[in-house]
Image (cartoon, rainbow, N blue to C red):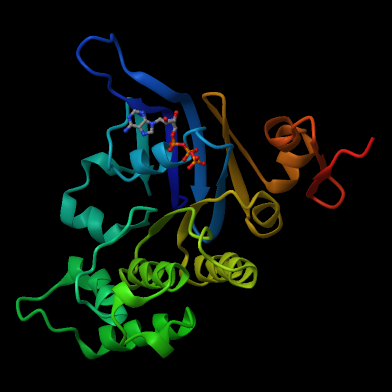
Length: 263
Ligand SMILES: Nc1ncnc2c1ncn2[C@@H]1O[C@H](COP(=O)(O)OP(=O)(O)OP(=O)(O)O)[C@@H](O)[C@H]1O
């Protein structure tokens, strides 16, 4: 069996309050896969439902219909401790880490494996050091998390997720606080990690041009539906232009970039 994240007949959205009838469906009829060893970019305009979909996949909010399976097992049926080991999530919510250092926050990624003593094994300490180095977070690893810049914090939260050694890594807009070089570096790093470790990576981003150049596959969410394909397929079918072009901005499939309409 292929190792993959698979969604079939999925609907996501929000159950409404007493007086309104029925749930507010943000997207439905979703049938898409993400394969192990690859990075899938989740693309879509503001408010299309990227965060809603990611939160629903990992069980932070219920699916309104359908199934999300990880390597054949329904994610919402996994016992919480198993889910905490097999899935790691980096969301956009602010994290209050109190007085913890960056290294201590990253080490929380081992929490699902904690022993009674609470001490890390030698292998786990090496893992933490290795991941912090790989993310260039080691120079400030012993500073307080609360004192770091937004971009530095984002790397620590990614380190925490990788330190869990999950099968599925979900990231919601991880590039938002990073400078341009770090954005490119992060997408390349995610691809390397996915390929090396057989990870399934799903990453939402507004960096459409970067994602089209670096991701293996994309899910495109718009107007209540999700289409999937390789970047090439979504470009040549006109789907990318159809979703993101505006009267003032045109997509050039040759260069895979957006530019102004020149009249
Ligand atoms: N807690 C909530 N209750 C009801 N509706 C919500 C809730 N959170 C988000 N929504 C609505 O769901 C829709 C999708 O929002 P979501 O945050 O998933 O979009 P997004 O694609 O991640 O947007 P952005 O790119 O702007 O971050 C929006 O219309 C939003 O108003």
